[in-house]
Length: 104
Length: 432
Picture 1 (tube, rainbow over the protein chains, first blue to last red):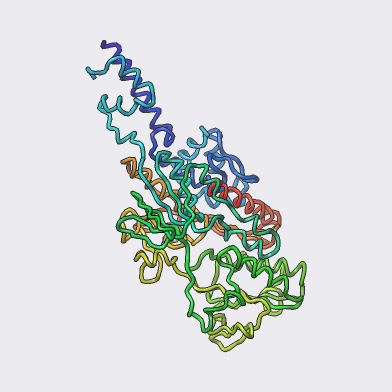
Picture 2 (cartoon, rainbow over the protein chains, first blue to last red):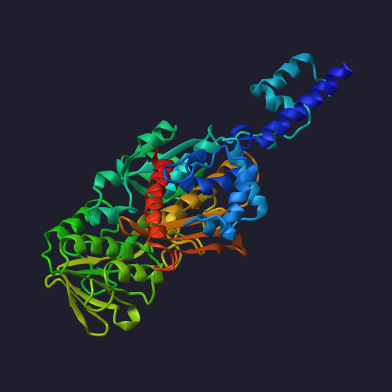
């Protein structure tokens, strides 16, 4: 019985962690990452897939997403619009956006 | 822990049993609570449609009802493209079928009254709709009597500031005008819906005139001393159309004689406080604006005629559980735009879903992007990111397109492409 309890505890912790990191789909609250990402979605579309010629930003590697956002601000990456938006967010916020879109 | 048996273990794995199982484990259900309840939204524009969409997306169990008078929505963004002859009204008209497919109850009726205390709206058809929360996104109303004789000029001097028949009326008047005619554009004092709108309108009318009636002129007799994206607009006008007295576009600011004293719809002329009279073959008089009658009559406006809200939640300062978004609310540094309304709608949806789930809403975040066409292949923009700081929405980043020729021609051409992309994305998000 004790072994089963440990198994259950581990499993529940796993389920809970999954629910929390999966954001709104399962936990049904609204994570900060989902709200931040919704600001991108106005132009880039629901789940990061929008009308062309806007870039689709779904399924992007987190590191690449963060790299692009930083390069827009430094102007190393040319953009007409993104340099003005990207500078408005902290590293932590950009990370949260990247993690949100990675799984879309 | 002692009570967890094999059957509970099975329940834990199934999603339906997850919440009860976790309760048994001593984990607070509030963390996982489902948001349920009823939300009634008034107004199916950018604010209302986007809020309905995100409420359903983030809280699928929430009963969302959207009340809208009209059976279709015609966007103000891109209506200057219709006035300039580059698009037709059908290109900027959106049905509500997409919202219905998302599980939103769309009720087409006119709201006759709002009981903010009871969170209830009355409809012309006799129905009453009550919600756990209300979201009001009713837009603007026009204020007349600011200028002498301005009350009955909608036909002779169309405002075209609510897209639809007025848009077509202004278009038809431009089509009927002879080459060599004068178009007067008369923007109201700030604040008004779509701050760059009158100047984008001047641009796209200029584009039409340049290609079809090149001897014609546009005079903007402005009740403001400055305007949105001014340097970028003026540089682009100078480049594409000519700017200044005797050129295709002339701008007269308030402090140089642009303040209106009276209109004479019979003579199709306007007189300014400096005593100058301008005659137009087409006159676009844009009236002074305040929040819509619906919120004014419900006692939700301040002394200036706009709705004060807590700018982190968009909850009315005078009515708990009543959220007011879009053009009718006071939103700190955010301009009155469709993009701002959509941004406010998402924050409001996050607040409502969180509260109905017994959770704390996430920290707010806001953004705006306003593109303006100078011609169909040349556009400029303003964009900003905002934060809630010391009780109001403050701009923390952003800027305007550098005035031509600080960037290459191609930059502005690309902005025009992105303008069209923006329109498609934001309207898909709103109406499907």
